Length: 388
Image 1 (cartoon, rainbow, N blue to C red):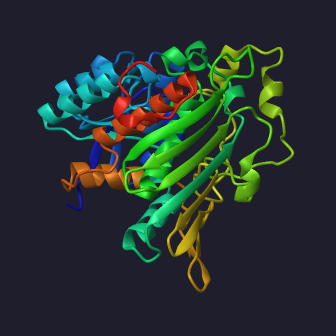
Image 2 (image 1 turned 45 degrees about the vertical axis):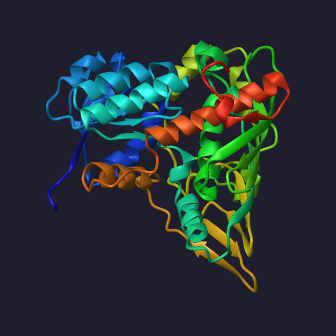
């Protein structure tokens, strides 16, 4: 199997792809062989960087015989149609989170992959981050007993980064619940290792100029008795990177003096132009090398015989008698865990953790957060279908 590679095509040369491309380029198990995107400048940049064809239409990519796996990194509302088309074409699929916006669509995507005999994975998400994986493995070993409580807190400037109109419209998958709770829920589910039973939540939409949820708090209970308290704010004031040694979410260094920069950039500027300037294919300075792992803010797990605090470089373990640190090596490409899981699924035939059922359950929790906030009550996951 030494000469085996995954021949991967990318649909959507988006910001998500841009954050993942260094991993795809650095991992010898992957060969990026094609792309599809409507933007000519993105296609030109891709062909120059990868020496591979780039098409204006996704269907053209799916017709390529040398594309074995498709990475779908397009807007949320397009994931279902593209996944179904990829499965019909016999391609394995890695689809960005959230998997879809409706549970029925998640189920259709999962069924289509099963019927076609292809693998479906949902990600990248912060559930793949090495400290999360390391902590989950320690919890699963039973050394500290069962996880009983998780506290997860993240304060960012998410809402004031340049956005397309649909990214500020909840009905089209906009706002922090679909985009950011998808990460936070993934992390806590990975750590607890059980299904979510109920959700009690409140959301905040406090800026009329950005008319979608910019914050939420949620209390989750799990089958087996564990619980998790989740807090997220994307309003760009307090920054939990202060608790992570000023390592940013993508692993790079964060400047604590850059307070308010995201809001200031929007003043008097064309948001569409600012968005285009961040997109793959636009000229810009290279990103700094990572100094830590990607992360999703402060995470603390209380187990029966000890606590775990996830950091940007590993896991601090507070055991029954002593404290120790599990360091995880920081690599130049931060998302190698995604390729690990993709390779194991496609090449080795091992069922992935982040499969269609997993992505569907993550979406159900996000929908429960919206339902609970709207109705002012605790919501059982068993109640959730497709109306938020």
